[in-house]
Image (cartoon, rainbow over all chains, first blue to last red; front, side):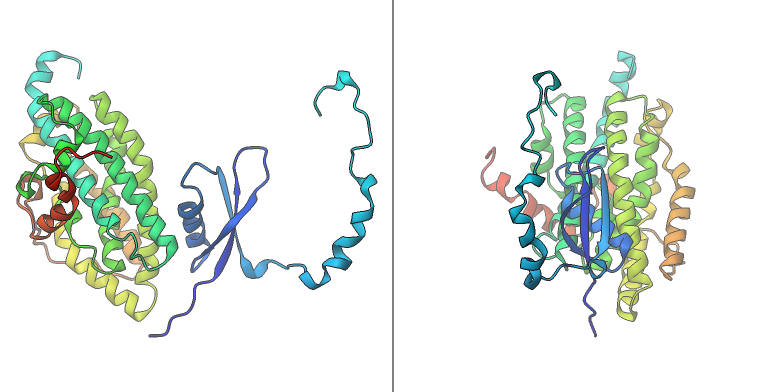
Length: 95
Length: 259
């Protein structure tokens, strides 16, 4: 008997309306419909979600950890990109 | 039930009937729990455990109600743990051993294809408690049916080996499906009172669901007509005693133990 390993799927769950789907982990499943079931059974046992996406792990293009200096280092010196230099008038309240 | 005279007359069949539903849910739930630590993959370990917990939850609600209807002070634990095999009223189908994964899936599919429309209809019961339990259980059964149905399609229409195992399981479990539609004096009384439905009226939908999935799964329903019977009156296969020996051990060895 030959066994083919089941494909891996990445699971994204949206906890509430208005929030974005968030990556929560992965499951093995033979196809998309079964991946959705597996994601439901593994990741929504405690009322975590209202919506699930499953995506074949092979569909994800990832950045190369070896290039992290080139990719991410240049932003470290640009603190002015953080919106922390502006006073918020008291009347505005919470933003 | 709205009238007390009805209530007094119907208490006995209502207790028997609720106990049948409770026992069926508990025994199937316990069977599925036997997969914990043994499932083929982590995903199914959790899936089968989830279904087991749904069923055990249904059983708890039904046992509590049965105990209240009986009025002799028996709670859910007394009913689940302190009766012997002859006192259990579950369907023979659900006490059948797990076998391989295909057998577990076929058993779940054949049962859930009945349970979902059954709970949907029972949600309109004149008995408010049964109606409430049914409304909750229907959603659970709908997922159980989808889970088992999707698996059965892939097992039947999968490899040569998975097809063979699924067909073998179907042949072995098919004779236990007749009991789903049995009706006796207990049902007669409750059907007349609008508390439950005639199971025969659920057969067309069950047949349709089963035929559609088996067709997609390239599996064939056995043609032989002989059907097993007896679980609903306490005549069980030898498997139930072994199951109860495990399930009831703690309460038998340490009566009243809590934690």
